[in-house]
Length: 227
Image (tube, rainbow, N blue to C red):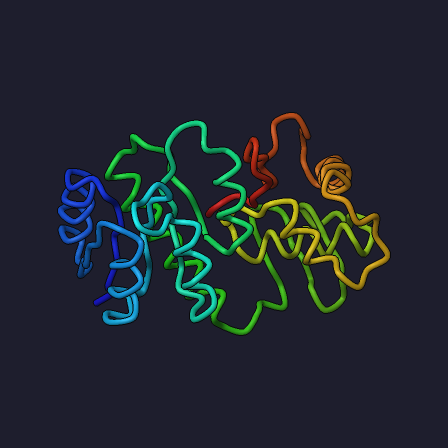
């Protein structure tokens, strides 16, 4: 049975999250501030954290920094509307997903399940062949096909697409995608990622304006479709 640590200073939110997560079979531990969150994390060793950014004592970003020094436990951030910069920083520190308050508790359960599923997949050996719909990526040979039609991707484009497709549903910031390309001859500024994504879409999407595979997460970055 998986354990979820829910951290929020609003008792109604922690109780609502607890009720819904326990209903589907998770064990839930709660904390109301950053310091007690770290204590609970070290004591209970949860399988996932649901972490509010706006906490007393230590804010959620400081908690994320501290946790990431010790663990790669999945983190789903809770943010208030308008915290765009904090959302970006949180993802770049290593949070796995985010939800904006107020949120649907059913959606929270779905996000928790999806992030846990991705974490389990990421812990295995990376797939040599990635398939999604009509798209196939042969990773060792760096070959891509759509509906059995070969697609000519540059090495940079293939690496970006493979990184995204290997973790469907995970939101990557531009900075994280730049990290994927370290060691590759590449213009090292974040907005260059947009140009590469545009080129990939042009090559693999039936209609690049209505993508099936590569989705923009506005103000944050990109993700590959979640099966």
